[in-house]
Length: 197
Figure 1 (cartoon, rainbow, N blue to C red):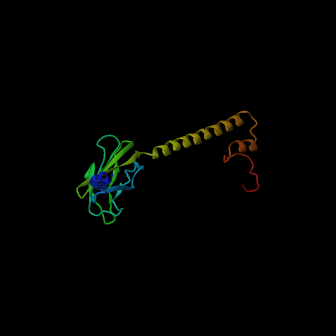
Figure 2 (figure 1 turned 120 degrees about the horizontal axis):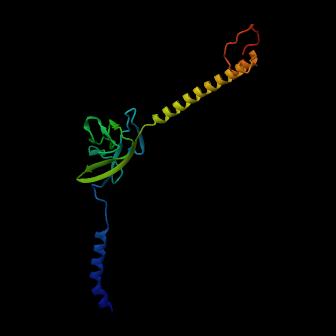
Figure 3 (figure 1 turned 45 degrees about the vertical axis):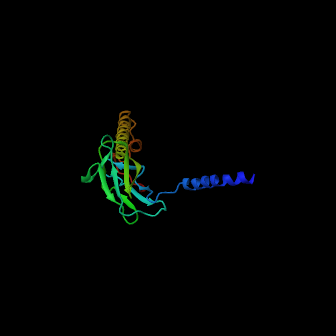
């Protein structure tokens, strides 16, 4: 029995050595992209103002990566925008804190949600992330409410004018009834003195 057990010892040693080699370790060039600003932002079409996407690159230990190129890509159709003269794409290096920003984002005239793709490379390894922004014109709702308020004022003035005309036509247009029907109107007759309003 001891002889058989000793013959299996090299086999167990090989299996143990293979298991140790199979344990995955994080590659030294592994990194990730963290979204810092811009995700779920609302851009104003009317004011031509967008929210710049900002990301941070960190290595496997969570430390910032400086000098890595980061490219921001905007959609070519539909709701989108541009990075000033750079157009639909902008490539910038990360700073000492590992951040890179797509400065100068301006929305196009199309309302809707769109995605900004972020691509980075470090030590020969690529990584990507996606941000979502929305182009909208929130001032349209404010102008609609203004129109409704103006219509209500006009309607109120018309009703007040009809009430005054009806009171004068009925013949019971005493100064007090007309004054109550149309405040601020001028009534002919002798002046009356009363307490200030």
